[in-house]
Image (cartoon, rainbow, N blue to C red; front, side, top):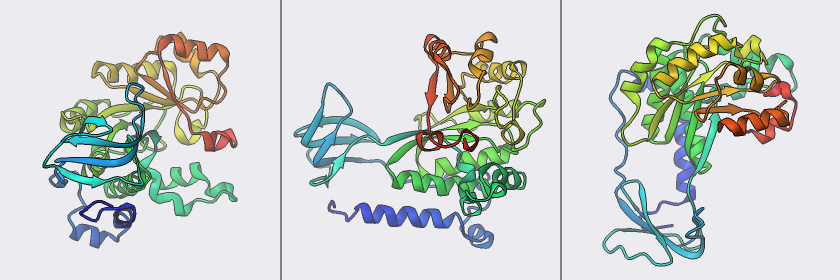
Length: 327
């Protein structure tokens, strides 16, 4: 614990309270001003300031620095400016790191934050109450406030687990107000992240996502400090779980991905089935701005194709170790 009393217990207590706040009844939420997150001013976050973590076991994740059994980390205005066995920074706040590990925050590359509040409704032992049926049934009645609360809950969990950057894979963007609510939750929490703009749940596969709103979302929300960025998520082209998640043709993908690329936005897509890599490659859609999710069903040729085009992959080991139908 450092001198102002902030420790792990304080962090967990605070984030638990933050998560619980997302579940308050509507009247209580409205009284705090959070009922219409898209129409209210940004939350006032603590100033970043300047401090030094001293005497921690530093896992730098940098080959030029290595790991330090006892080291200091100097942070100024949200940026790490020095990591060494001893950092000279007189007059700044000191955090006592003795007996603790200091390391960069974890980066989560794929999280459907809009589904967080639905966890109590799901059951693994009842096919009618597993992930896809529950999210499909509930997603169509989501309000922007529901989206805001759910994202705030997930971000509280992320921060308590040491995740400081997350990609919000938002595949229930029912309106621009829903998009604003989710991005507002990310802004209000102060986490670094990317909002991957997608389609509403059960959106017709022959209709695009709201391409007209993408320039507005980029203009209004992408921050100069890099804390919040924008991308799109795409429905699958391998038709895996198409009934609930959506499945599109390569031609539709060209239209949506082309619009995203005109704005310089990266693209992410699930590929839990087979055939997606060849379909995307044949359509000339693969590139270093593409992230695919769940590498189930890929073969050696697929993986060579991905490497050739610089495509990245996001994996979910626990889920992928189970049945493919659960992904």
